[in-house]
Image 1: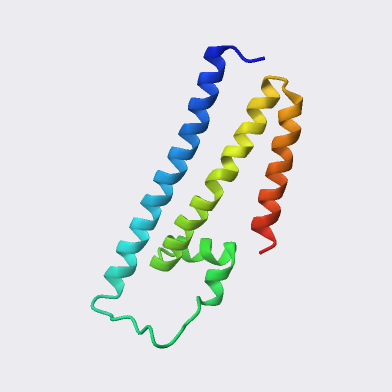
Image 2: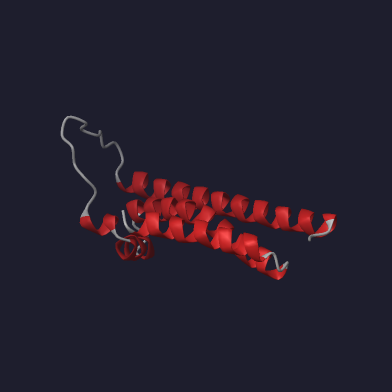
Length: 124
């Protein structure tokens, strides 16, 4: 069983993980937006024709490669990936926290949640 102080520290840690993930994601998306818009000044979108994302934007490795090349679209997509990874990181920290507290029921339940999250993200 957790003491009140330990439980508050644990809750604070989980809140900070979520806050950091959202802030990092927002910063990367804003950076990508600035890069993208500076490279495409005055372009008017044509919404009459649907154009899907290019192939390199459909895989994690392609997104990371484009982000490393400082491509605006790649940076925006990387920010979205960070946002998607944020709750997964929170669940990982929860597993670690429950394991440190020897709360094995919650470790097992949280691992089930983590497995479902990873499965849903990786199987499309």
